[in-house]
Image (cartoon, rainbow, N blue to C red; front, side, top):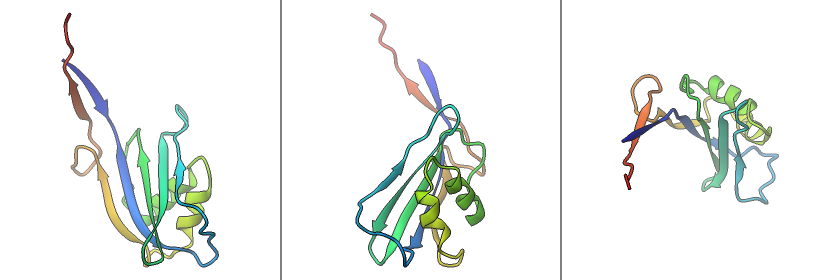
Length: 120
C-alpha cells in the first residue's frame, strides 16, 4: 500500500459585490504556479448581490484565520482579480464560511490517502 500526503488548507468567504464591479462573467478561477506559488482561488457570483470567494493552499503551513490573512493571500494570487473583489468590502461585511484544513484540527495536518497497488 502507498500513502500520498495531501497538505491542503482553504478559506471561503461571502462578500458584497462592489458597486463598481462588472458582472458580465460567470466565474473567476486562478491556478497555482508551482513550484513558486501553491495558492489558487475561485470567485463566483451568488444570490443577494454577493460573491463567494475561496482560496486554497496546497502547501499549507497555516490556515487563513483572519480577514487580513485572507486579503494577503488574495494579493499573492497570479492575477489581481480576486483581491480586487475581496478588498472592497469592510471586515464587518464579509462573512466567513469555512476556515479549514484537510485532516481538521487547529493546524493543517497531513491527510494520507491510501492507494492499494495491484501486484501482477
